[in-house]
Amino acid sequence: MSGFLPFLLREYRLSLVRLGDHLTQAAFFVMIATLFPLAVGPSPDLLTSLGVSIIWIAALMSALPSFDRLFADDYRGGWLEQICLSPHALHAYVLAKIVSWYLFALLPLLAITPLLMLFFNLPWMLTLPLIASLALGLAALMLLGAIASALTLGARRTAMLVALLILPLAIPIVVFGVMATQSVLQEQSPSAHFSLLSALVLFLLVVSPVASVAGLRSALEDG
Amino acid sequence: MTIKLRAIALKRGSRWLYEDIHLQIKAGEVVVLRGPNGCGKSSLLRAVAGFLPLEEGAVLLDDAPLDLQDAECRLQASWYSSNDGLNGEFTARQNLQIMAGLFGQSADLSPALEKDILGLSSFLDIETRLLSTGQRQRLALSCLHFNLGAEALWLLDEPNSGLDADGRAAFEALLAAHQADGGYVLMASHIALSDSLLHTTFEMGSSDITGRGV
Image (cartoon, rainbow over all chains, first blue to last red; front, side):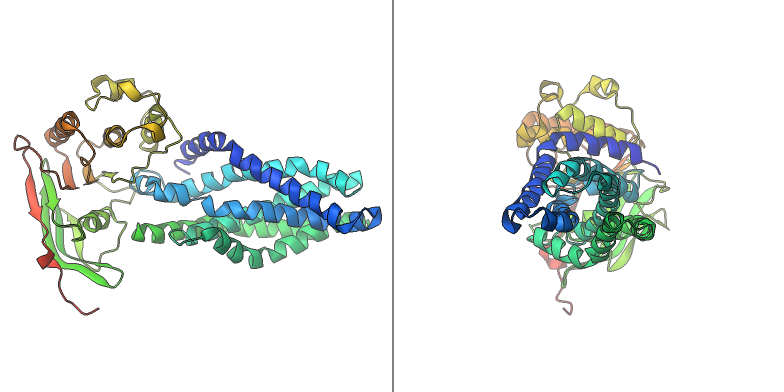
């Protein structure tokens, strides 16, 4: 795809500048997950049974608020106009944005997950399935977030709007993600849940760039 | 080749801006749109670039429809508006490199900076958000050249509003060079160009706004 690498390079440089924002998000993730043991009480059995779900919800809640900024700066700054008239396609830009946002904003959440598992007394054998399911789930969430972010460009107070748009669509992601990990805990095969989660990611990988580009184009009409 | 705007009608929301604009830009011609605020100069530029859909009419290049956003388009276009596509967090040099990369030029800026008509060298390593309005405008205007289709169409929305006298002279030198290359320029501006630069003025009065049904 023409232009993908130059776009990725720009997003990479931009992410380095904004590393602080992304790390704040990771800190927020830790904070939410830390509050639960304090609120629920120190019973190890209860925490173990709730742990996977809480980590999932915390990841969701810390990832969501950032999505409204995904395209907003480039839209206001006139970068989208330049892309439209360049030899490169908006599709390549959208994909580069998604890939770099995933690497810089969402991968840190995965890196911290093993630490959070300690808080909930989760067995070590869950590390791999939990991180794998979160990696797939956050990828699907990211792709949904791109659509919502592109569609709400130009609207006011978009952070809540984007969250409201995404959350209902994120229900299957959470259900399959949590079940994939829980089934390992119950010594069953998680492969069905992982297959469904991967199918969701692949489906969104096709749909999301197309829908996002359509959203960006319609926002440009108002520009 | 000639770019023709034929019977263009534009709407913003439910309001008609105008319904019958005819305009021609020949190779090597600079056309300046003038008119009161809100008469639709920027909208016309956005429509020619293809960001704003036309209600009626067509943009033609020698009688064939012109779609500037098509990568296969015979004519290339450069765009300038106050939302200049530069990122405030990058230094001026980084922004130039990114713009050069976008239009397929090498990241080595030395050939581009050799002439340096707009005088960028004094602030190349400063973060773009710290530049003054005029400096930032110079930086953005210098990116017009990265679209190396020599006879590109330049669509410029208020390109000289923040420039000082030197800057305006430099900007006109840039236009003259583009004119000599056989390029096209369509710009909206409140600041008159000097008479030494050959240009045509297109008046867009409020009389063009018609009371057509809402």
